[in-house]
Length: 255
Image 1 (cartoon, rainbow, N blue to C red):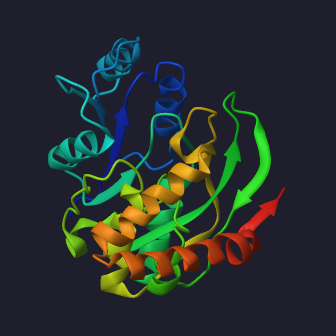
Image 2 (spheres, one colour):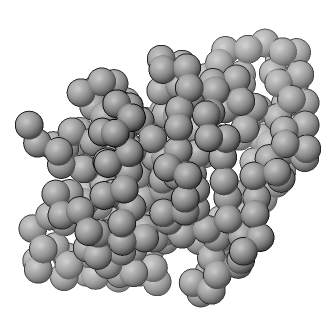
Image 3 (spheres, rainbow, N blue to C red):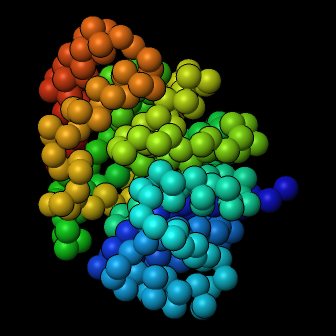
């Protein structure tokens, strides 16, 4: 049975970072992967850069959207094309450490799990370490995830033999959180590889940098995905804020 990992990467005007991101995949100690890059109508040199890599490495495949449609559409197109047993996500500005896939797959096998994730470190826009590591509960429960997305998008890995391919929701943001909630609703708890296996790039222009925007998108998840009433969603947001202020900081370590 194939143990291939399908890596899903949407791009949009990612020329500044995409080469380093691809190289971090090519440097994996686990070789059986395919990288499905879907470009969301970039206007910079992203497509040219990716084509150069794809011409030299047939594990890298590029698809282009005719018009800018959002990361969710790009991810779903990649998901449709994926041939691997395992699905992983890596955004166009983030990086993996060389043993990321090898260690996660070994962890899944040893513990007979269909899903795992890991801790990750933060870097700035120029790749400079911010001396901050984001951890997670070593036995993450659905209720904990309901109030806080402890799982970094760049770290999750799931088995399609168990879950099938999980479609990406059409939300503008927090799409990964919905995938993880869908998974934990089935398996109840999840275990991370308890070490940092990736680098998350914090950019000044990222949506996640805006706290107000984050709150708006989270409220929509409670309303539209969980289908809570406006009153219940409001109280869910109080729980979310409580978790962000008092619980999540316990899982942020200075290096």
